[in-house]
Length: 165
Image (cartoon, rainbow, N blue to C red; front, side, top):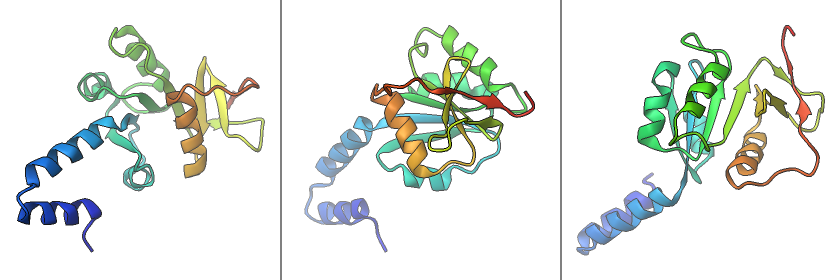
C-alpha cells in the first residue's frame, strides 16, 4: 500500500505538477518541529512512526551528538542518561556550552529514573525534566509538548530518584 504522499506525487508527476508538490512537501516537512534523540541502545524506529507530527533523528553515539545537533537544529533533545561514550548529564553540559544550542530544551530518558508520583513519570533531575523508561507514547507526547510548546505545569515536577541513590 502506497503512502498518501507517494500517491499524491504519482498523480502530480503525471499531471506535470511534480515540482509544486515537492516544494509543498519540503515546506511542510521543514515546518515540523525537530527532535534529536541521543541513545545508544533503544530502537526508536517505532517511536519515530508514533510521532508523525515531529521530524525525529536518532544519534546513537553521544560523542557525535553536538555535531549532529548543529546540522539538524532540533527543537528538543531527548538524551539517555547512561551511554558508553559519556553520561547524559555531561552531554547536556556540552550542549549548553554551544551558543547555537544553549536554549534548546533537554529531556532525559532513562530506566534509572523513578517518579514519586504514579500518575506522571516526568520528574526533575539536575534542573532538567526526566522521563523514566519504559514510557508510553502518550507520556512522551505530553512531555514533548510541555517542553517544545512552552507549557509548564502549575505544580512543580516531583524530584526524581535515580536507581542506586
